[in-house]
Structures are given as structure tokens and as C-alpha cells.
Image (cartoon, rainbow, N blue to C red; front, side):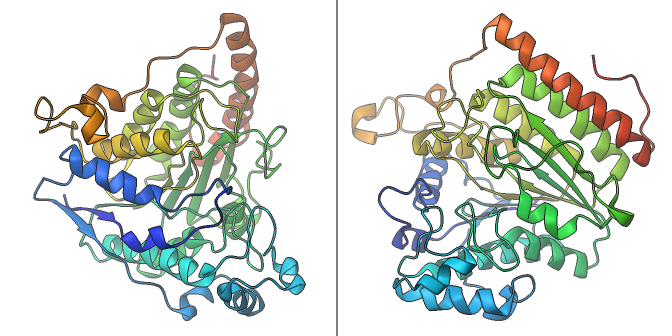
Length: 382
């Protein structure tokens, strides 16, 4: 096994604004914490610095008009015509270097895909990738470029015939769904807070693909207050049978961490314990994994969670070689490895009953409408 952590300190030079929830610098914090806990020490692990993608790479998905608008925004100067392309909104502000930042994110994701398709890596994690809302001709949802769509297209062109895309961000991956909705060479599976209560207000269970892609888009809307226990159950009920039936040659995973109960923008109730169990399930599902960071807006919790995710992807246990040598107040990362883990959490029983009823109805729908397309049989959930 060869594993690559894709990172550059250049992410730290870009900012969407002091009050904006998306913080590119969290990648550096993840890198430092992984380094501290010995998660780069194994001979099969490499830390690699990405290079920006070319403008030609952007044209593999985005319209030329949008690319020109994004390029014009690179100076940081706003023009009202940019609003037509989703630029200059509170979600997607114009900032100095926005075009350069987009090319760097895309370059990291495309290098990751190339490492997998060429056989040089089996697992790659790019923490600042996973911009799943980006559209053909517009920016939205903190996403200026859809690095995922372009990377999946590259993987398909390299010879892969079955790519499974799984999205565990709290927000639905609408940009990726739109790109592959009528195709069967990409199986799209998204677990997300329901569009009834959260942006982008789509991703309902009856969105199941069209044409030859019918049954190859799978949406699992989650109730507010879904906790670890409920999430793990629904994930194993849906993801595990589908991945066994589809037999993907590569899994592209958007592993956003805005599902955590401390996240300020969402209403799910996961801890990083449940999150890690899901990451382990994804890791076991395919030998080739391209993991992309996505969302997560409680920065300290995201940093701990992605550090644990990197450990899970590599079958490692974090260890602290400095424990006992210097006090935690000086090292700045706590006193022990146990500090990486959240305290266990469960929602109240009455609330859990409501959550389970909601999830049961979604899973029964998916097993009834989608599983037969993939020749999956079995008893209905519950």
C-alpha cells in the first residue's frame, strides 16, 4: 500500500474573509497534528506538495464565460457583472487570489487522481479539496471550482469504468450529482442533512438519476439531530450493500466534517467516534480511495477529526512521542492521544424515536426503488 497526504502551506496565504466560515488554513493545522502524532512516520506514507492546475483543466467542466469571470475576480476587485456567476455573494466573496486559490485546489485534487490512476498511490487525502457545490457556470456554497467532477472525469478517461462517489458532508453534493445524473459509470451516494432544513435545499430520496443513470444516484436525507448510532446504522444499511453490488474500481470520498454536533452551520449530532467508524467502512470498501476534505466549520473539531480520518485510512493508531516531556499547555495540542477523540454522545430517547422513524422511511424507499436495479435483495430496514 502507498499513501499520500496532499498538502502545501500556500493554502495559508488565501482567505475568504475574517468572518467567512471556510478557512483554508485548517489544512496546515491537520498537517501539524498528523505530524505530531506520528501519522507520517510509516514508509508507505508520503507528504506531497501540489502544483496549481492549468486553465485548460478548468475547461474540462466549467464554462469559458465562468472561467473568465473567476479570472477577473483574482485581483480582489468586485464588479456587479460577477454576480451572474455567483461571485461576490456572502457565500462566495471576491478576494485577492481567488482564481489562483481555485487552481491550487484543483491541482491538488487532480494530482491525487493521477497518483491513483497511475498506480503510484492507493490512498490519497487532499484536505482542501471536495468543493461539491461548484456548478458548470457559477460558484456557490463556498465552492469556486468543482474539483471532484473534473477528477472523476480524469479517472474515467484513465481507464476506470466504475467510480463510486460517496459524500458524507452535511450538505448535499448538488454540483457532483448534476454532472453525473444520467450516467451509470459513476455511482453517486450522498448522506446529508435533508434539503427540507439545510442548503442546498435538494438531495431528496426520489432524486435517483435518469436515463441509463437511473438508480445510480442515491440520496439519503438525514433528520436534524441524527447522532452516531443512527448515522452508522443508515450508512451500513445503504452504502455497504451498494458498494458490494457495484464493485467500484475506485472510491472518491468527500469526507466533510460539518456533521459534528458542534458545527455552527448544521444541525446533525455526530461525534468523531461515529465519523471514524464511517471512514473505516469506506476504507474497507475498496483498495483505491481518493479522499477530499469538504466542509466543516468548527475548526478545532475538524482538525482533530481529519487527523483521526488519516489514521483510519492508513490503519494507524495516533501516538504522542512527546507525552510527559513537555506540558500540554506549551505544546498546544493537549496532553494525550485520547484528547483527539470526542466524548460519546446520544440524543434523548424520544427524539431518537423521531429520527429513526424519519430514517426508516428513507431507507425503505431506497431499498424498494434502487436496490432492485443493482440486484440487491434482502429484508427491508427495521
